[in-house]
Image 1 (spheres, rainbow, N blue to C red):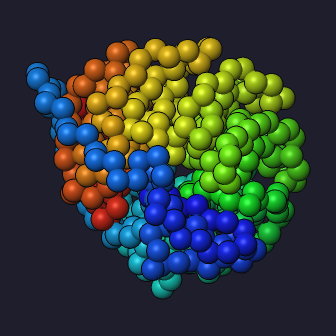
Image 2 (image 1 turned 120 degrees about the vertical axis):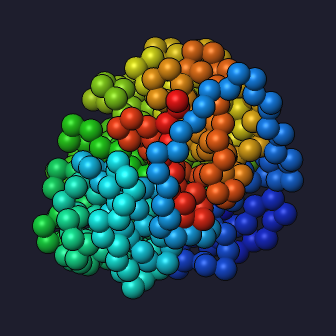
Length: 394
């Protein structure tokens, strides 16, 4: 779920909850901070599940539980032979990726506001008050603590000896993995009204790519936090301030010489990683971002349709619209099929080349908000109730 918040005052709306954006924004546990579909689907009834004929079987490899995410957005991470996951209550765990058996499970003693990040050596989470906690990946022992300027909604990322943490007030902090000392901070002003969502970061070949309010995508040097280039994915438009909200959502997707990003009430667009020159763009509104494989870009739009776009030019390959308003997660391409979760805990499989339904499996009945994560021989989903389900098609 996602929420919008203005810079000046708290405003109640029948469709969206507007929260104050300030330099030190506290967490709001009494408010579900992720109202995923806002005004465009407020009150819309999710589509009935289509009947599947000749459906493929789905195998549950293992399942476990980490603890509820409550109103927040939690995603596990896979490193080496381990899965690292966290819960809102402060539990962090390392699980064997093949069996789901816990190697360690600890409590950090604080309410966590984002998913876990890891490089296989450190495991990093962030608390409501902006405190960043780094644990030893092998033992779960606390290594260091540091702090950012406000609540953290996106999972930390680790790259090139740095822990990268994005705070809700549009700042990116880089800490050294060894000591937790601050190396640099990147900041830019936020728009008057922005989407409060777990918009994250992606790193590639010495750069970190991040999206911001107003539809901006920025490439930042990992070495010193200096911006290399900036591109406009989408321009705000509309008669009202709410209609003009055009924020990057999800993590930018990077592969080879391309970085792609998506904006709410805006576009999906791809750029050259070195200079930011636009390769193509497509008008589309999403709340989960864009994913791609070697040939296609995949998008779940804000009305619940799934799109496959040609990565070379952005043209539509297929559209699957029979899951309307089911609040789909970011799709995960898996070779010949694509998987995504929905608001009732179902995981759907569609054919990569046509979008036709292949299979479906229920998890624990709670929403699958985060994108499925690849595992060797399958993939993993984490539900809002804290269920971890490792799945594969038979």
